[in-house]
Image 1: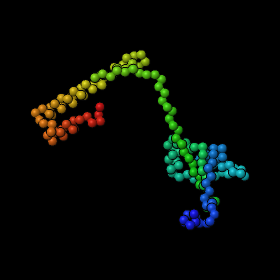
Image 2: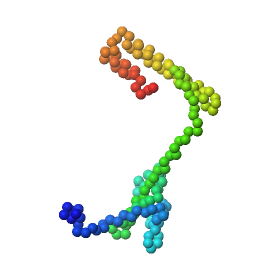
Image 3: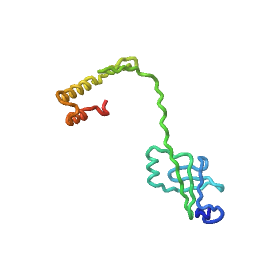
Image 4: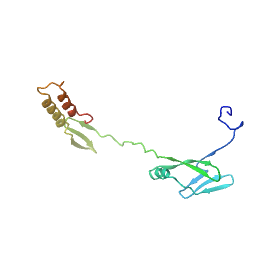
Amino acid sequence: MKRRGRAYTDRPEVRRVTVHLDDHLWKFSLDKVSIATKRGRVYLSPLFPKIFWRYYNNGWSVANEARVKLLKGNVVELYVIFKKDEPKPYAPQGFIPRDLNEDSLSLLVNGKPLLLDTMTKKTTLGYEYRRRKITTGKSTKDRDTRRKLRKLSEGTRK
């Protein structure tokens, strides 16, 4: 490794120490963090950056594990891991029968029939009447006619 320029000495050396902590080795609160060591608990008073508060205030919760990185001097970096609670899967309680017709939508909610007017017949007939008015006596290969028909087309509206 030294010949390739990836190492400074012939034998391995430890430059940076990172410790992964489980949930029983550390306790988290906003004013202090306690870490269990061989000689007892060590208490740290953390300074959190803006991104921590962004995650903390937007519904993310602090996960059970954390990482501690020892830097030069008496400096300790604490990497807090966040997790977002997954929403509970939706379990339907029953089914609602429905019937979709040209003008209306029929539903049966709690044993009572419900009729909703959709007006799709008027919409489709309106398109047909406007299309017929644009194309009567004109070729659909004409540039102006094609432009008007393109503007008239439903696109994503349905």
